[in-house]
Length: 468
Image 1 (tube, rainbow, N blue to C red):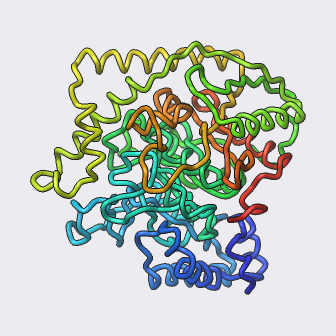
Image 2: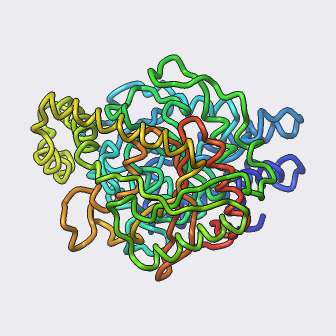
């Protein structure tokens, strides 16, 4: 089998399984071998169980030979961020405070359960910063996860293991989490696709300590794969307080053969009123907007009238982080990421008035965006204001703030509003990927995917054409 099979999309793999050109077993072996060879320089995987992966692949192969595949993801390899419970494997969350023998590990998170039902082959678990607390991926347990485009640069985070695995050709699909940009930040830095759907579309269990802003979502190398994975992950789960009704529309079907965007009005904000971009980022995002105009969309520059809402986000985010750390009991001070402890010292003295004010701002932002989408179908922003910076740092060198939110101005606002937001590759600056972000009204997830698919087809920026 050609080595390039490892770079095929999920859709292409499924087609090859149906025709018999490839088998799930052969693809699993190739990817496991690639993990052995490639991952030591990237450090995306924190758990690989070769026997379990090959057993699942053999079962999928038998279904294909019998003509009874379970669906479009049967036999397709997928990696899982190590914040999501995966039955049979420990979920250590990047922390030295959790041990593999601590519990039975016999429960699947909803996303993992649905992947099993669909016949997907679990390739392994991928890295996260401790408890997913920051926008880069390093932890006391697993060390630094690096960017496949340049190992001296960060992969971003907190779903950095997912993004790095995809960019390194270690599987076509991954499932990440996003509480403030944790899918979109690393996807942009690694040149892949990352989608944070409307809050509640992909159910989450156990509840996240960051529940008001926390999402689970697909990370892929193409928009088509993203829609396919979203269809599998979506749907009501009674254990999730925020879970929406199961969608009646297939995301994959909604984006099929979409090219004309002439029915759409798009607003473009290059900075949300408080960001600042490197010139190359600005140029690449302007080019994305030009492509959307060429596809027929009406694009207008907009000003949302926002000031930086980081203060409100910090109250919600670090209150949850504080609960997590305090719940660890004795020994946490010696074993927990020291930068997390420092951040909690900066963001601990919140009052009831502060919490009420933060939630009031969140609702005000949601109202602003609700009214915005009465006029505009979509908002376009850069995904990140810079390319990936030095690995091992939490903020870029020379940053005016020690908080990771200081360099991610375009992601966390849309966790506060709960809207669907995707990042797609927009080009390169100095050999490193950049991304553009598309945001739609709540429940308009297919609008985001439709525009992303049309842009991808017209621009040709996908990880299938450009590889580290």
